[in-house]
Image 1 (cartoon, rainbow, N blue to C red):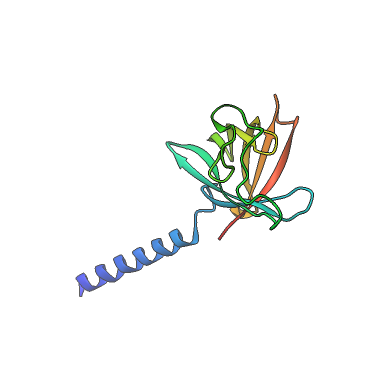
Image 2: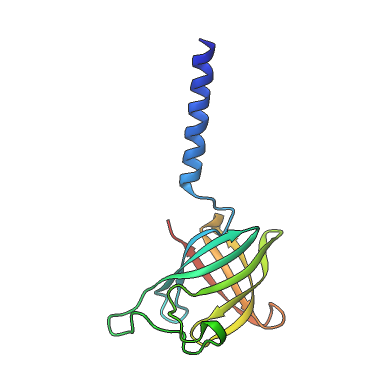
Amino acid sequence: MRNLLKTTVLVTALAIAGTAAAAGDNTSPVGTWKTIDDASGKPKSLIVITESNGVLQGKIEKLFRTPEEDQNPKCDKCTGANKDQPIVGLTILTGLKKDGKEWSGGEIMDPANGKVYKSKAELTDGGSKLQVRGYVGVPMFGRSQTWVREE
């Protein structure tokens, strides 16, 4: 009877852990995020954020393009190794580290103009949104975007 109880407790614990893992970790930006165009309000891209040794990076996984737009655009305004590389697959977010309730100390690159900005990010709405800020010098001189977590 005791072994049956232990087995039941173990199976229940594993089921709960599996459910929590399947639901996603809303305390971390790791995952897939939909960016929204500031002007049109329409989805612009999907960014996959990964973490390695406590440092986040984000890569463009997909672009939402109209049929008349180039479906595989290149980063013609980028410099260095990113010059003329396909935008899909481009790493645009690097070096973010956990700092209290936000991630900071990183950089974000805007493929539209090829410029690299300092960056920070903070989860909002229970982890369903990510407030991403790119700036020059100090955060006050920059621009924020809200990314929406993909399920």
